[in-house]
Length: 416
Image (spheres, rainbow, N blue to C red):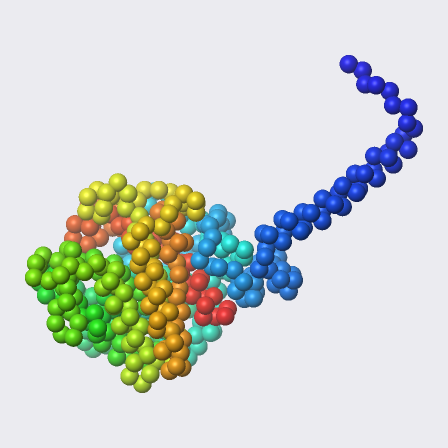
């Protein structure tokens, strides 16, 4: 089909067409700026946006976004370390050593909404910690985080473990305290084993029954907390173990797992709330008064699917969830609310004594990472994690998503 002839001369026709197109382009660009960019970046001002192209965003840029909300996005950079470059990885988290089938779990980075989170800078971290001390207090996930930090720092310096003549051993067989010294920077990093944060006695080893004194902080760490510049506290998982609760030296209740009938059942989150209140209160009441910066790390979800740890559950996914694919579980949401409240209640008292208390909220980010656990690859074939505990969908591979915790810690303690 032939096109119809147009009698308008070519130059005049071009001008007639160009004028309205140019007008439309101007109007379109103005609308695009007003309605798209203004809505997408409401918290980035002119000063911070001028540096947004930098590979290492300024602290001002990062401080304008919520680091707890975001997505995991592909990361082309190599992991900070491997099992061959870091000597501190425990076998139970050494997924590379034991042949985890997919290594894609190390190829993602956390992208907060509205900003870029700077990568961990080991040299800057150690320089900021020069002459200072930091304590991690909690259970095996606190140790998981502690070992992640040692591995991140190993690119710059290797610490020496300070071993005493007779280190105290917990009833569970774990060292109560371990100290690592970076002589080049005068920095000491310490790990305290305290799975409940409060005073706890193993009342019946056969039944695994614990007596928890919810109104008394565990003196094994609380008596030393004033010695440290920084303290990172965490816990929740051990509260599911059979327990009887005490206050004022007398039994006031138990959890549902306790094989006793002469005490009122109390929901676990209530006990967790009481324990965190006591632990954070110990910061304000610490002998010599704590004047450092305390961080409470929020609950980290497990990812057992098709069963629990002892009923055939496993974690075999190879990619992160997208944010709209998963809602935070009710238990984790309740624990997180308890921790948020505990920080709000205690921060004023800690501040009055010259200290500071903040929340390190990693819950949503870690809830999206079912692929980052050891599963069956934290031990040789036929081995176990602990007793009959074969599949681990609670702790985190090293390297892995848990390195985010130290990236956020770096931002809180160094960039700010």
